[in-house]
Length: 119
Image 1 (cartoon, rainbow, N blue to C red):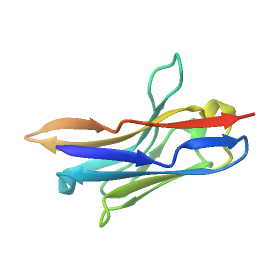
Image 2 (tube, one colour; image 1 turned 60 degrees about the horizontal axis):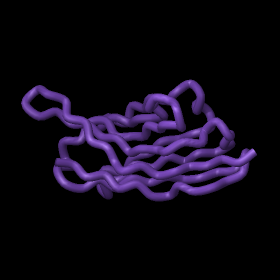
Image 3 (cartoon, one colour; image 1 turned 30 degrees about the horizontal axis):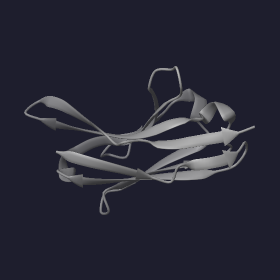
Image 4 (cartoon, rainbow, N blue to C red; image 1 turned 90 degrees about the horizontal axis):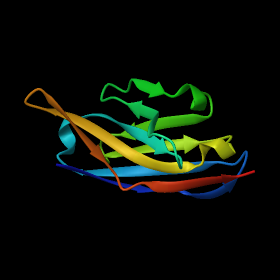
């Protein structure tokens, strides 16, 4: 199993910055992709950014150029630096990780952290 604990959410004005962090514990050596999804009220959960074990990154178009994801394998952490925040970035942000076990992909989720951007 993999446990994920997020930190760093909060309230910020438009144009401001926040940094989210997620610490993984458990069977962390086999984690492949790790990153962030978000869910705004009344909307489906959507990808924000992920980073693979080979450090390949994937960003949603809406955050490219504003958000930066990074990974520290030694500390089992992933961070999301969010700059130029907009009110539409308001959502609950969930840490995500996956790993393969016997050829089956297993997904893991954190509890979520609220990010609110005021206009």
